[in-house]
Image 1 (cartoon, rainbow over the protein chains, first blue to last red):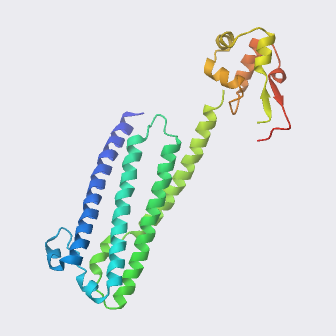
Image 2 (spheres, each protein chain N blue to C red; image 1 turned 135 degrees about the vertical axis):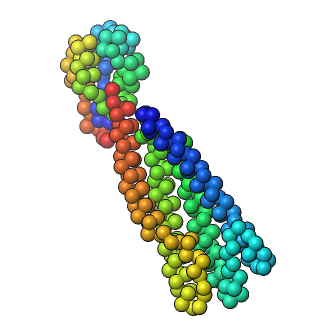
Image 3 (cartoon, rainbow over the protein chains, first blue to last red; image 1 turned 135 degrees about the horizontal axis):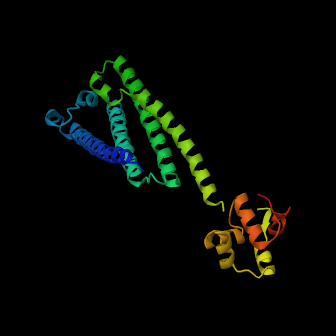
Length: 178
Length: 71
């Protein structure tokens, strides 16, 4: 493994950890927000993420729980996605990268990325639909702004995972050749 | 698989042990053992050539095809 690769992978590990911790904090913050929106809506303004949907809660509980489900699911999926990325960059051995564990993890990455993309897309459509009914949901746009990017990324990762799994097959065949 | 490896028969005929063969053909004992028990997916021509040279035989003496066993 070259020196450059080593440095790049160390950098990737650090970046992945930072993003993972950030996403965990965000997901945790959203849960706190959710709990406070239910029991003490007036306190939400003082929280880290001032996501106040109490008006929606008063108008339509289904819409409120639906929107929060989308927000929380996407936040958790993003955190878990980066957990897999951390596992991947920690476990991968660049001198012998083609093994079934790495292949599985790359495939998992594509599935979770696609899930995030699809959830974001459905959430965005639902939010737009709700806006027609007079709800002000501009503050939620940041949670699902990049749904297409995630879907595209999932497709690219899936292609890479497929090529990688073929590589694993070849490697195994090579190892069983005398 | 439909291919049966008869290396042990040839080794017995030539009265050669696996250790000796391993040293002659310069292939690890582990790999040679796998080859002898038919636990490999493929064999290189260079390996086959070396084994044939060492055992003074033809590839057909080492490998046999059986129609009964598939895949």
